Image (cartoon, rainbow, N blue to C red; front, top):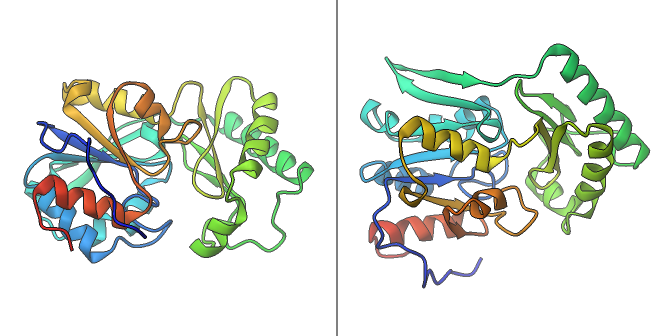
Length: 263
């Protein structure tokens, strides 16, 4: 992956918090964070607060990031964790991760969403006969469809829908049948469903409310900042953003931000 020239990126501006997408920004999809990235996040937490916001659930944050960060309680207290696009918010308090809020679907809502997702995927011939794990996952405040299964290897996921056309077709089909909900493309094989108006901009908005910060205090780093991407709503709300392609570019940016000589 080529190095990135961060000319024009406001590295010298004073930010109070850096927010990151997870998959393909901090780590390979559904994979453990690299030691280099873990070390850089620990060093970043010496300087600013850090938020991780993703469509994944909290267990994914634990498996991919939290268990591999070389940090203590002081650094954990500077972390803001926002699974399922900010419909859940966790902070470190009294030696554990505490849920600040959650906006879960009712059982009836979940059942309807799962039924529509299943039927729609089968009608569009997007239902895998031999998936790697569960295709539909109940994340409480978000229902996620993963075309190849939750545990599909990254190489298969990246090859399944490189231009996003399959996800766009499924999103359109499901949105017609669930007009009161938010239906959007998530990761490389996924479609996420939340309450209407809930996306990463919603999550960042809730974060600003909780912390008392303003838009100018936050810098967001993500791999899907193109229009239609699941990080784009953060850019559209006016937050300063840095676009990356993979965790290696994120590592380069963090090194630049911290004034570390690039590898």
